[in-house]
Length: 219
Length: 177
Image (cartoon, rainbow over all chains, first blue to last red; front, side, top):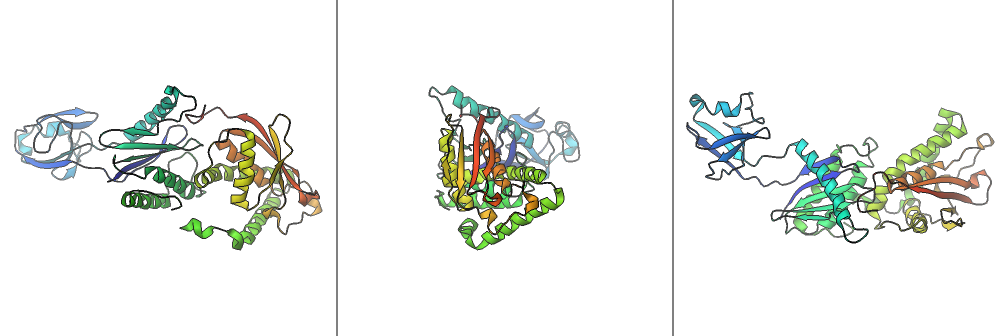
């Protein structure tokens, strides 16, 4: 059972904090000889597999590293275009690591902002007056829990669907925010949270929540 | 748990009173003008209030108040109790129900304080007005807060008057129409 990540969104919908606690990585590293039997294409500034799924390498997986060195988008660490590099027989044999591409910070900002708008739609769609916004979003791989304070800040936790005690965890994160972010006079409201004590306390509360399965009151 | 440790602050209320006193006297030296000091205290209070409200909401299980009367009760019975250890009484409601008074029997900020004659316009505890104003603004309520009576200035009681101005409609959190 795991808690995957935590997002904090300010009143205007801007992402002010994001932490990935546990991100399941399905990665595969293989050595290839020329010619490459996978079809690659560029998508969203990343080089992804479009055909040739085998051995743990799936369609949609991105090139994460070449010969042990992490790539930079569609270029190698040295700035060479990956697709061109892999067309040259002299560069083989080559070891490539494939895996699900991580979300970039910009992508996370956009997703948080989109969720902020969807959250509002939740209450507008409601047949009953005075409904809250979206409190939970469920897929077969994870559950997204959202808690909005009376002041408009949203705390969002993505967790394993079987993980319990997230409500308590959300309230705990609110307390940690009110302590280690707000009581730090050098932290400006609505701005990205860059407070070490906040990070540390958040991490330990996630550990506690994962182990206990529940987060009781008065902890 | 550091919160349990700070529990009853009887042992550091002296430090609190002294700290507040040092703050006010330094402001008096810096600005040399009671009206200006009152303004600064209100500003500081506001900056405290916008942060304190989250601590209050995170720790108490108070939900959204349905009307101004409920707000008054929560302020007097929960908030004042939590932060200053006192419970003012709520009285003097206006006919329209948009204005009320908090009567403070005691005020931890002014333990041991006497106002000298040359500071007759100083509203010593004006920080509290800013705190209330800032805190309520964060839950979408615009209010005016002022001291109507002050024992430091010779009145029998200390009276804080709060008036509801309007609901702040911009950036209303979703689900609160």
